Amino acid sequence: EIVLTQSPATLSVSPGERATLACRASQSVSRNLAWYQQRPGQAPRLLIYGSSRRATGIPARFSGSGSGTEFTLTISSLQSEDFALYYCQQYNNWPPAWTFGHGTKVEIK
Amino acid sequence: QLQLLESGPGLVKPSETLSLTCTVSGGSISGSHYYWGWIRQSPEKGLEWIGSIYYSGTTYYNPSLKSRVTISVDTSKNQFSLKVDSVTAADTAVYYCASPGELDPNVFDFWGLGKMVTVSS
Image (cartoon, rainbow over all chains, first blue to last red; front, side, top):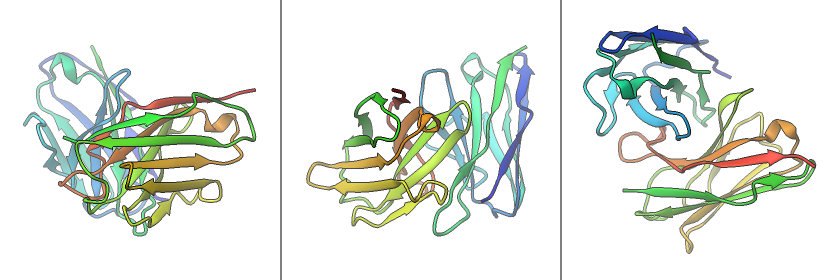
């Protein structure tokens, strides 16, 4: 099983500042990595797929990068609605054995 | 726009079978070319992919759950279903059905609201 480790577990950021979240894979997943946002009481929402492609309707302040085992999600200028949980997901296996990271909570500083 | 909605019992006794159904609207399961999935979320394990099914019935399961899980599809009702046998307290979670969209068949672009299932006597 490919294990995804997200860091930090909690990130305290002021509105308007930049947030940088990391996701490390236990083995290479090429660029087959996605990021999701989850607000309290809601289902996850797809932000990024293919390491750096924004999903439909996702603001440009969200960007993803990385390949292999190291990935980053950057939120360039945090808005109030961005304080939430963020998860990465790898989908490099076939047949599928997709896994998620344990999440990073972005909270208001 | 696809919409998915989970339904089923919210309380299941230990050792019994958990059964949930996902009803799809705004699109056709049989008209799609990707896999429809079940994912669960608990405080202990976080998000966990359970398995996925193609409209033709081809299934893939999480190896850690494979021996207890069955996913099936009913294209006439535009639904797909999940069964988890011999449940324990560790199966207590919010269960989501989800599907890719047109972006990438391996990621989940559309999600149901989630169904909280508690395993308890």
